Length: 320
Image 1 (tube, rainbow, N blue to C red):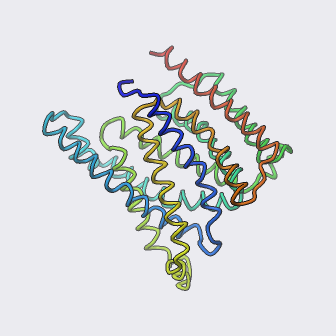
Image 2: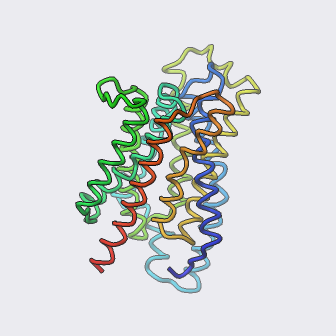
Image 3: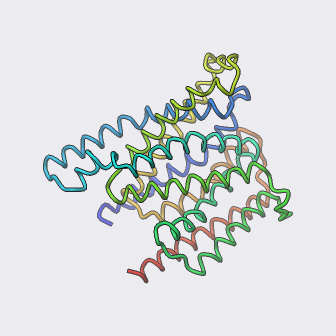
C-alpha cells in the first residue's frame, strides 16, 4: 500500500473505534423528550456542517489535479461522474435511506440498551460478506461461513444472557441488525461508484447528511405535534445534538483517514473492540451492567471477526 503508515493508521483507527463506541451511549443519554426523528435530523445537519469544508478542500484538490493532469478519473470525479443517471439514483437512495437509518438505530439503541446495541452492530461484517459475494463478485470461503456462524452465536449468547432463546430476542437487537444490513447494502452500492471514480467519499457524506437533514426537518411536523417545537428551543438538547453530530462526523472522518494509511482488514479488527468502549461508558454514565455473557459474547465475536478478516486476506492472495 503506497501510503501505508502503521502509527497513523493505528491512531486514526483507534480514534474512530473509540468514537463509534460512544454512539449508542450518547444516543441513550439524550433527554427523553428528544425523539429519534428530530435527533436524527439535527445530527445529520451537524455532520453536514463538519463535512462541508472537507468536501470543498477535496474538490479543490481534484481541480488542481485536473489542471496539472487532466486524467479521465479526475474529470469524471469533478465534472460529470455524479451527473450519470445511475449515480443520481444512487444519491437519492442514499439520502432517503440515511434519513431513516439513524432513526431506526436510535430506536433500536433505546430498546436494546447500549451494550447490546454495540454488539449487534458487529453483524455488519456478515452482511458485508453476503453483499460482497452477490454484488461485487467477492469470494466467501467455507471457513468464513463457519466463523460467521460463530460470530452470530456470540451475539445471541450475549444479548439473550445465555438463554440462546432467539424467539424472545430483544426487538431493539432485531431492529439494529436489520438496519445494519440496510446500510451495508447501501455502502456496497456506493462502493461500486467510488471504485469507478464517479463519486468521492466526502461528496457522498456531505450530500447524504445535508439532504437527509433537510428532508427530516421539513417533514417532522407532519408526524409530530407542533408543540414539539419546544425541543428545538431547549438549550440543553443542543448539547446532545452537537455531541452526537460531532461524534458521528469525526467517526466517519477518522475512518476515511484510516483507509489512507491502513488496510481495511486491520481497521475492521480494531473496530471490533468498540463494544468494550461502549461497555465502559454505559456502566459509568448509564449504569448498564456488563455481564459475564456480554464478556463471553464479545470475546467470541472479536475472535470470529479476526478469523474472517484473516481468511479474507488468504482467499484474496490465492486469487491474485
